[in-house]
Amino acid sequence: MRPSPIEDILAFVTKAAWPTAVFWLLIVLSALIAFMAWRRDPMQRTGAHVGRWLLRVVVGSMWWQQSLWKIPPDFDGLRFWMQNMVDHGAIPLQSQLVGSLVIPNMPVFGPLVYALEVVVGVSLILGLFTRAGAALGALMALNLWLGLYSAPNEWPWTYAFLAIIQIGYFIDPPGRSLGLDTTRKIS
Image: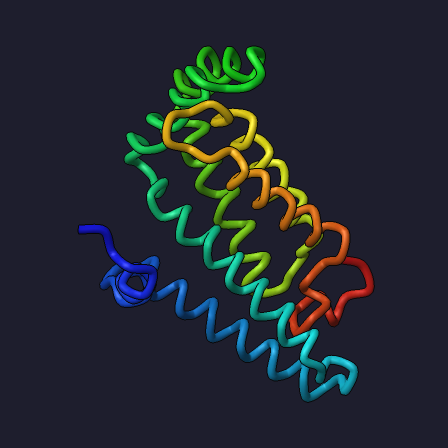
């Protein structure tokens, strides 16, 4: 039986494993950062800033959760989806590169994909360097969109919408709302 979204979230946040503890630490840090920004800067005390913070944390949590099935050294799931990119990609050159370069070198690219997804997730959850994190997330989402465009049982607009969210975050970095980017001049 498929879990409901509530069951899925509860399983994710209660799983007894080190990534869950790190996730909770990130969430607590994000809340503390938001509280400190709220107290320090009266301009941050708006519903819009709270909304941006919440959405940023949710999207960052999605990146964190999706990184978990790529934790080294097991890359079977990642290899499966990479093969789908080879078989169903929209751009032949991308399919060829994934098939001839990425898959054969999974010990290099697997940890890299994992690390990049963790960086995007942490950037958004903490509101730190969110423009850079969003740019990286947008590139990764565009890669997924084009690579899995014709994959069976995949809806390509899922990845397009993820790219759109990340591009929006690049244009208007959400870390400026109750995040660590509020303390930096450039984000």
